[in-house]
Length: 231
Image (cartoon, rainbow, N blue to C red; front, side, top):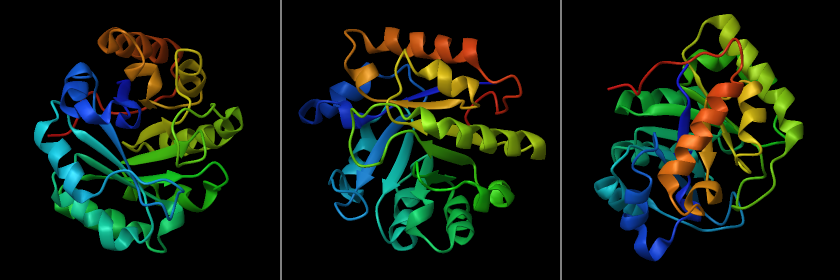
């Protein structure tokens, strides 16, 4: 199983974003949090900014849409060239149709679940997605504490993916650090979003390597996942 570390630029210095992206060039993908001040009480990037990040980033984009009306807006982020586009289950009534649109454009399709959202309704739909993001904090702000109570949900998704023999990445986002990444890895996660834990380090590349090693040493026995990014 490959362990992926996706630093969140929510913790980066926005004034020097291109330089900040260069600091995390050893990561797997760069996690881009798109917030609309409606679905969550914060405002970050829109398509124009994400397009510029796509232009200068040394690694692929993992776009996380914390926005309303994703059926309208999500395909545009795939069209920008984002490697992965994840939308929230709570923001659409047609998650499968939207995932198929994203895949048709050429992006990996991800579905995100808030801490209070039950995974059960989506377990039979897992083959329609390339990634499931189990939020380990309430979406909307960086720097929150890891919610241990989300781990049973992560385990249930991991068990369902494994039982079905699917190639679905299991991502966690929120409070991921050297203290918590092993907990999430043991519960089945293979893709980890880390913000301040990476950008707050003196040498981000060293922190990325440390997080990757910690996750690999704790990974779930039945863990799944491909060995590399798709072409």
